[in-house]
Image (cartoon, rainbow, N blue to C red):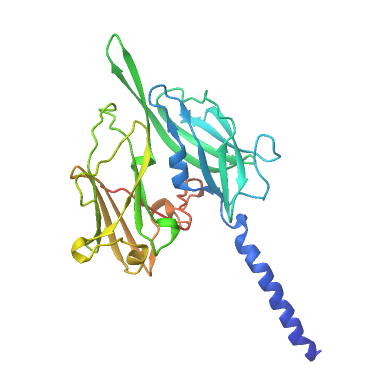
Length: 312
């Protein structure tokens, strides 16, 4: 019997190695979720008529391998719900499997009749095969404009667009330059304004300025009447030799970081975070475990987006 023990041990090892990768890659190991940047990019509203729309987005960890769609056996829908839970409208998506854990969602209907009934609080509820896997709360406001002869109503979305920003590296490669992205919209008080402010970023590590965006005051920021993302490439200070500020510069130096974004020299937002052990320290709804973890509203950044909440 002893002479068979090495063979048995070898077979057990081979079996374990064959099983472990598949277990690690199973979608069931993580709750279904949405890539947060694609969600914020997708959801929007027509400024003049209140037409609500979503375009395309990326999902992760959906169950199974076959596609979802109106003419398929499996279905992924979004319910537009008012604050009291009433379903105002339902959209069905075409969903196709991409590489790894990712799925691409595309608007199946292209339905121009999507609508939001009135100003108020709303929630998008995403369901795969009838099971709720994600919620996205937002609010809608209306401003009456024009004059007595030409009255106008302007519609606005409010929510996480103005509350968050994220850092990433070009092509998800930490040896490449760091980019910061957030969302902008024309001011509600002056939605027709064509003022283009000058953006500037100051990036600090432990209180020391280490990178910037825009040492050229001629650079202007275009803003639209709907939320649009804008990204900024960070550069090292000219006084220290210049060049791009790369992911290796950030992840190679632990510390407390603060990114401060200015528009026309007025602070627009401050975004604080930490790097420890060469890794970004998740915060808020980007923490995947612990007492505050809530899968239905988790901020998914994949392996290349590091989300930071605006604090100032």
